[in-house]
Length: 330
Ligand code: LMR
Image 1 (tube, rainbow, N blue to C red):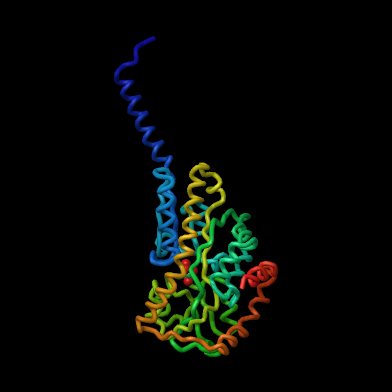
Image 2 (image 1 turned 120 degrees about the vertical axis):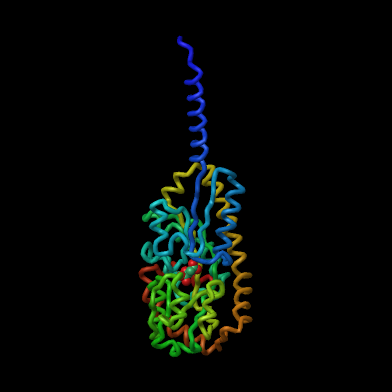
């Protein structure tokens, strides 16, 4: 056998080292999580917590990159991006899934949940858990629910009765149920990206909007709206989603570590949301930039009556069994 020359050996060692390096690099899963809100929100904090825990549990095997504030994708693009593999996790509001499944529209029905405990009851129950799989035929898996909170109604005029909203234009999320809710009070809904809302309110493209205290505070909507009615008339929560193919193709150790981090992050975000909501609601009131209106029982009843027909309108699409299970949590 001919002796292997020193230079061939050296080249071999160098190649192996290179291969080793590449192997190490490709063994690390770089995982992107894109969302549209600010970091100081329940979803923003939940995503950061998920990153921290996943990297603690899995060490160098994963690197989680969180992209807040619509930096990477807005909600109209993120689900297709997940399917393409351009991003691995997103957490759109439950109002943004209409193109993918009609069942999640349940979450947009006005005055469906009396408080966030009722929301947790439904999400943790049988029907709520089933809904995590409602987009399986589209290749998307829901891996958890994260709370934001109940929505408030704002405009540049006081909205006490449904008739006060007549003819006003409201920025809404991309949900047909929310559009029907505003149409039921003869207002004009305009679907619009979250990132465009502040300037649409500021320039008068729309007259009002509905959102949670956390989003109203962190995106400064209160600075460009004279009145906020504390209506708690609907829910804005999230489903954290990923690609089924990617998730199932992961090394089992990585998938289990991520699932563990996700469970902990969901618990963290869901516990945090109530405190952040209370804190940021108070900050909006203290700012003195807007007037927060409390509705009387009669005013609440008038809003409830005006928008209740929306439930029937969407019952077939959603499924009456799902609506009943949600209502039973009150
Ligand atoms: C909105 O568009 O108002 C919300 O869905 C934003 C968010 O993610 O909370």
